[in-house]
Image 1 (tube, rainbow, N blue to C red):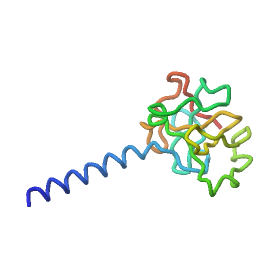
Image 2 (cartoon, rainbow, N blue to C red; image 1 turned 90 degrees about the vertical axis):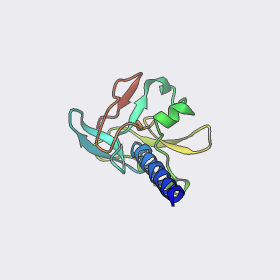
Image 3 (cartoon, one colour; image 1 turned 45 degrees about the vertical axis):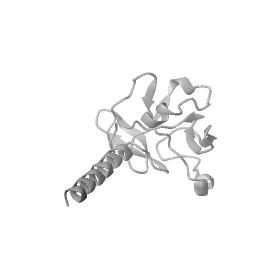
Length: 138
């Protein structure tokens, strides 16, 4: 009985960790939201704010591995690549896709790959201006 309780407790802890980790992962499609102190910003469908990284001004994906775990990319499901809209209301620029080194497809704005920060919750911006990462303002 004690082993069962320990197993259940470990399973619940793992689910809680997974839920917290998934909180900062953006979901497609993109939209705009209002964030206190930042105004209107671009976010994933789940309201997780989106960022660009100054080191990717060459329009290539450089954030992989540990970087992509801390800064999850806004991935576009293969079944939805044709649904990448030319604009999101309130956002100036052109949306497109880029193929990541792992073969997945990521949304871009004006050629800049879009990411979230794993420590952000929906409607929250914690890392604007950190190490070249900037939230996308609408």
